[in-house]
Image (cartoon, rainbow, N blue to C red; front, side, top):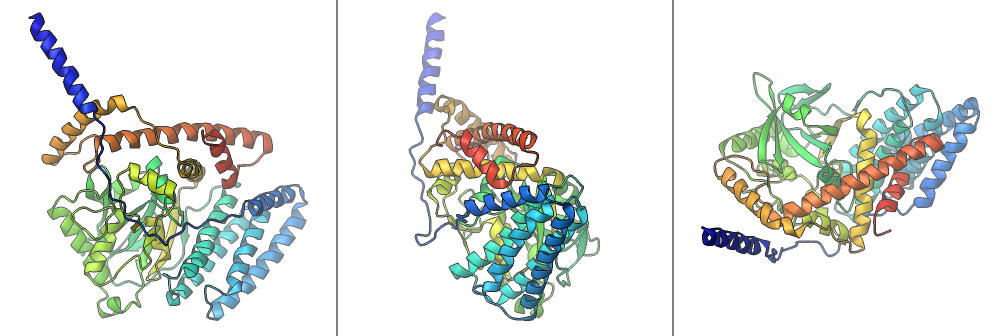
Length: 489
């Protein structure tokens, strides 16, 4: 009996040792050598704007209101000129408008009048519409064009959100931009009229969502893309999307809304595109084809983010593949990820292709109109907090810091992975996602835990800041706080 026990123990130790052998398989990384990440490099400017906000808070409200009205009139005149004339991405008026928008924001943020904040949002919405419509004529693959478009669209969104964070009043979560014409069946999602074939870019509430939204040469606000299919006759909407845990899936409207979203934006192919003029139902046809494919076969999640191979799909690929089959190539300018730190962290989650289709970049595609944007105003600070922590972690990754994980748990997780594989065979969902190895699962858990630690520390610092200084810390202050909590600074 003792011999059997000893043999069993020896067998368990031997098996544990075998399962402890590290994963030495190499990963093929596809990237673009000429790409470079965009960097604002304007820290002093942001601090100046913060100082202007503090001065405006101390100034007589009437004086601040008068100056804000004056600056807004100047911006309205400039925007009117842009609307009435053709302009290129190199047009100095574009930069002038963005700088004026930056200067107006601290004044509006300091005013207690909630109506002024609504006016700023409305100005942002009109400016975005004018710039998006003009960008139809621009070469989005030209780096300077891409930078100009990114700066003004992302810059204005970031600006209005800093203003909103200083407001304690409730803001309408929906910002309407353009009801682009469509012949396809429609429905309503959170007050926004959407059509079959529309694309929803969104930001989830998870740590990985923050990494995907920021992990780009042009860091953005969105981490996920879903395709809407609206059934003819019933007008019942179905949301087709790829999930890390279970691959491509079809959700009803209630399920989509219950899956926590910090924000989403509805995008629609322009009605004047030649392909849609030839067949106005093309977006609906594309959505229905993907709906039928998702019902007919299991489509695993594509961790590699290879949008050329559709056997497995990541979220962006769900929309781009079916539109490509119908003659419209979305992401006219492919996403590039060239930062060493970003590549290393995304590779933790099995990503291999760094010339790909990132959710945030879909906003800049000239073939698409922005229909409306919805944001969870109560979760806006969390959105910024998650992003700030990711930016700080990316700085450390750029300096060579590795995500440390407990190597001795590898045999256990490999066993769990085995259980997951069996569940996948029978159509189930296991604890380790299909397509992710045990080592990658351990690394991703370590990443999430590290993000959670830094987030808690940064939140505490932000609360102390607001208590002592008297206002919500802006994004650049959050990044500083998160960086102070890392081990590499």
